Length: 192
Image (cartoon, rainbow, N blue to C red; front, top):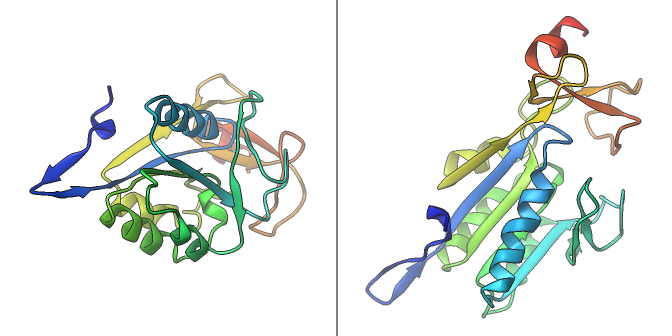
């Protein structure tokens, strides 16, 4: 059992936690989120899973990994909507966190302070290699951080950059293999 899967208690108050799963595109972030949420379901814990409403790449409601694993979720417009979880909820999962507003770290803190285990997955850098959305702030307050890597399509090394192959300069561009490819540091900067 992972250290982060234990519940800590002081007196009668249970404390939650924040876990961040981050990395480049195609690194398995959503796969890991789904794995952790399924383990919580197997443990018969009440879980709630959220994703940004704008992310409709694979499905309007479900979270679906690149390996086609899926789990039911609730699409929301604003991170504050996540605070409406039920009083029996023990684990909250949040996918594609980089697309949420800057209030997401505050929302996650509030949930953790209620005794909820919060698991967040998202890109830590944008296509230019810059910190992306609320992920850096979440990493700063998280008890546990897991950085996953893809495989560089140029050289086969571990990849932690999402190189945009589409000719579009806006920061937010929903896409898949037609728009992005994973690259290592060397191949990312060499081919810019």
